Amino acid sequence: MDVLQDPTWERSGHRVKGRDGCRVPLPWTRGGHSYGFGAGGAWLPQPEGFGELSVEAQEGRAGSTLELYREALRLRRELQGDETVEWQGSVAELSAGVLHFRRAGGWHSVTNLSSAAVPLPAVGEVLLSSGPLSNELPPDTTVWLREADE
Image (tube, rainbow, N blue to C red; front, top):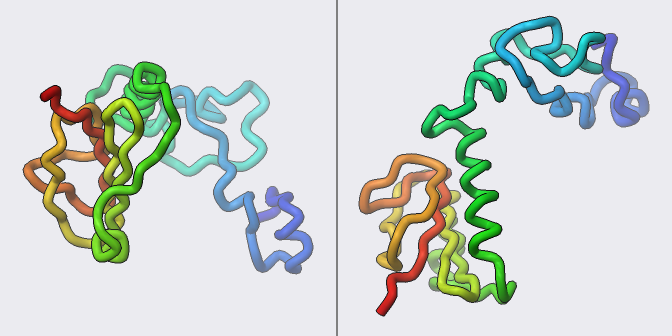
């Protein structure tokens, strides 16, 4: 705790971590003093075992967070265009924790923030998913879908 520097930490009399509780630098390698962040170490200590979350560990690994973000960035460039957003679904679906919007160009983003699986919209091709899919969208999962050509 002696390394915390966030103003919230100081103003709260060392009771509330503030941002320092979540500002640990990203790990780049599986090992080393700062998991590849730099020779002098990181400004905050990184958790033990952080190396398995590193770029080095996730590079090219199907299903990894790194590869999910890389694919999302690639798709975002491909799908960019008119930035109009149309909310889909009913108020009941929104209150049940399902966010579904359609972007111009015919692609959808559906996020299930609830604690139960929900039916996957029959929109078209799955472009990206943050987790495994069946015919349902599991809890805490987002999927991007492209409308089928008619």
